[in-house]
Length: 383
Image (cartoon, rainbow, N blue to C red; front, side, top):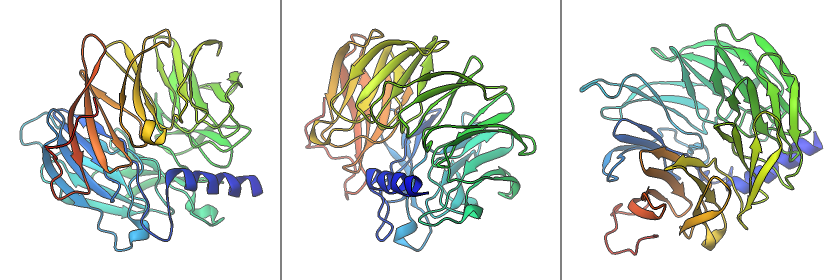
């Protein structure tokens, strides 16, 4: 319990979450068709043109208390937004413990459902269900630590899975099973149909990382500085990578048999997916809080390092080819679409970078969410 409290306090400091004042959310974006949906540090939901940053709509979460107004997880999209006139549903988990469903057309709220505990990770969609985890904040009330399946039509809970610890990441769904980690040191596999437990695996520390499912493996990192790969059917450990010197916060990225695992020790570890053997390590001199993205056959890595924060672009052998200095911490995972990557920074900016065919980054647009003119025209580009 002491270790759990210390880990919880450390992460609260890391995320900049002040339970007295307003939490500083660090939502990543979700691209659907021509729109980027994202949360702001002020607790707003925004719909932006993915190509030019035009603001289609923006709404502040309707909760009354500033201490509850925050968005940490990525929005999820339910419905076909590509059909002209179709009204898809944009799902947002609020730090106030409410799951909000917004209209994709105008941003109005379709429904909202208050759940137990805080929502830190974002929701995911599986069929007609939204799956989202909650967690107690500053208390030991286990009744607040729940994985919910919520009907997407009316917003009513369909089933609940109660367990011992808070869920601080978005769950992952694969082949009818939802996988998620918890601060109680366990990773769980639960059947989507009815919420019954398939298996659970105890690690050596809290798990705030999201999980990646790849080729029969469930891959994730923990607060014990280990990266794990479990059999997706049985939960049996297949391999463990122990070389990191600090925690894993972000979910790993897996592509073409290679696991790219970002750690708070500043390193991106590239591992063989089937064995966990180290291929190479890139050291950033900052912290890697968000998940990288693959774009134009390069690995885009968000590096949080104060005024030296950057998006580093690596070749598949770990060599840095280029970088774009951002100048403010990047705590979000990256979203990629075409040759653009999207992210938010702690200076209240949302940015799109275009990665040119030669691998060089170029700032495409920026939105300053805390300014009267959110599209500043007189600022120097980041790159």
